Image (cartoon, rainbow, N blue to C red; front, side, top):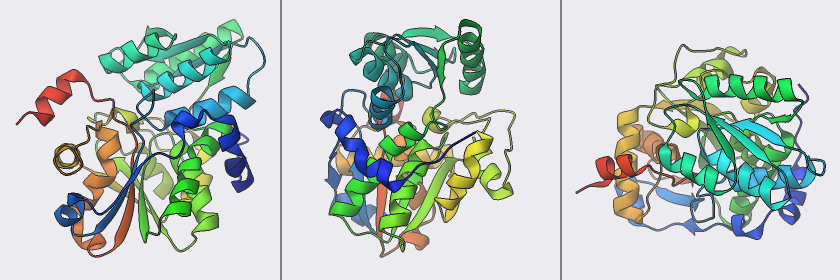
Amino acid sequence: MNFKISLAGIVAAPSQIDPVFLNSPVLEGTRLDRSLGCQVVAKVETENPVGSFKGRGTELFAATALTPGQTVVCASAGNFGQGLARAAGRRGHACVVFAAENANPMKIEAMRRFGADVKLVGSDFDAAKEAAHSYASERGLRFVEDGSEAAIAEGAGTIGLELVAAERFDAILVQLGNGALLAGAGTALRELAPRTEIIAVVAANAPAMKLSLEAGAAVQTGQANTIADGIAVRVPIPGTLALLRHCCDDIVAVEDTAIVQALRLAHRDLGLILEPAGAAGIAAMMADPGRFRGRRIATLLSGGNLSNELRAQLLSP
């Protein structure tokens, strides 16, 4: 697998991305500082048409990597599928998205609203991805794997550019699912802020990426049963692991209980509704306060597509 991204590609990316996804808000000096005992720099990626950072990478991919009229096929827990469906549809491409049978209903509805043909297959994201790959291969269609496309990672990397241009911070917490966000933001930060500590965050109930980066080889797990569907990876992409390991100094795992507490804290202190993966960085700070105390810490609030069921369950008084 040829997976190479560059700072030059990230710097050039904004010209191909719908501006609605760029220059997202940064919150600092909030109540969260007192709650967590550190200075929090929170990059808010929820206030855009797809409710997550995924629109950055999917925009760049659709603008630069497709031929006219080409149909795209992908698998998604919901946010990537929304981004790809919107970006592809705006440029005249059909989009087929495979999602797990138990995927977030709100995300499924949103993908269809953006024009995707959504097929529900399998018990989790990786089962849906296997079905999507087979479907695309059988029909000669373009299979798009979030995490293994350079354009998607470089689009996500624009988050790192914006943070470095506007803020100073000692460390950054980056959600780690299939890896596009870490690959893009990590590449930008390694070049432009080499002294910044980059900490990848996975869900403890979906540890495959942490195990793989620590082992230096892909480690599959039997399940990825976490509330954080956006980072619920069971089968890593082998060809991306070397780059991802270069893009972080450490990998931490957070329990679902900490993620739930982080959702509630973000709602109380920031007035924001996040989805579980979007609050993973806050959960990491809550879980190990001594590590971050007194430091200036950036975190990516990467998505806000919380299902109605979870919203009622987690955010009720």
